Image (cartoon, rainbow, N blue to C red; front, side, top):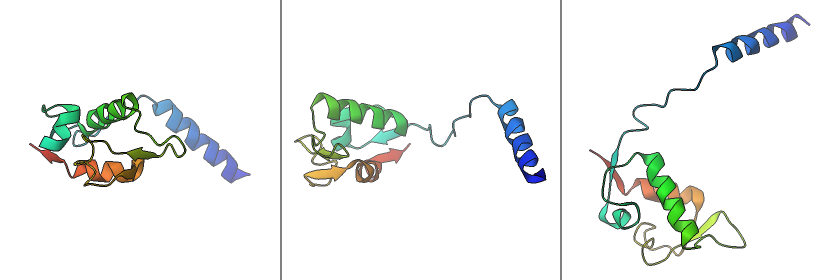
Length: 105
């Protein structure tokens, strides 16, 4: 019973500290997209979060998600070079392939 009270007390302390987490500066650092990726997201340096956001906007606008398995993305002419020539890529594999096309300044 003492353990339950101790757990509740630590949860309350954590809740009181509250507030939003600060984003990691390294995570928000602008990265330069490659020529193949800049066709989709633009040529200006962007944080990784914005690159992924723009990439998903393009995928949804062009209706490139597989209708049966929405975790898969089908490549078109613009995404083909980014995906390394693969026709279908899972969303998890996509982030790995996109990271190869981003370089720090």
